[in-house]
Image (tube, rainbow, N blue to C red; front, side, top):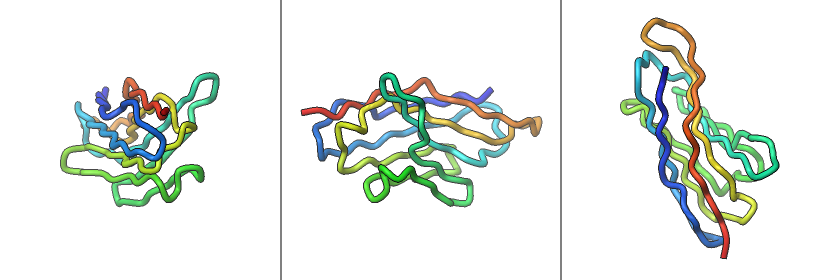
Amino acid sequence: QVRLVESGGALVQPGGSLRLSCAASGRIFRIVRMGWYRQAPEKQRELVASITSRGSTNFTDSVKGRFTISRDNSSNTVYLQMNGLKPEDTAVYYCNARGYDIMFALFDDWGQGTQVTVSS
């Protein structure tokens, strides 16, 4: 099993910025894709942004132009830089990683989540 540890969630005012980090560890052979999802109260979990091992990125429409995602393959860490935060960005943010372990078995694992609250 792959362990994902997230950090960086906080309370921030509208228009502010935050940077989330997620470090993956364990018996990893290769991580193909890492992503950030979020879940607001009484809403379904949604994909915010993802990045492949080759650097291809994908963003949900509501964060395009405000959020960027980056990845350090050497440390299996993914970052989500969030600028221009809005109250509707308030949610628990979850890190996800998909890839192959050292036995070449597929994994699809989640972090424990980090709370982002945007409020004045």
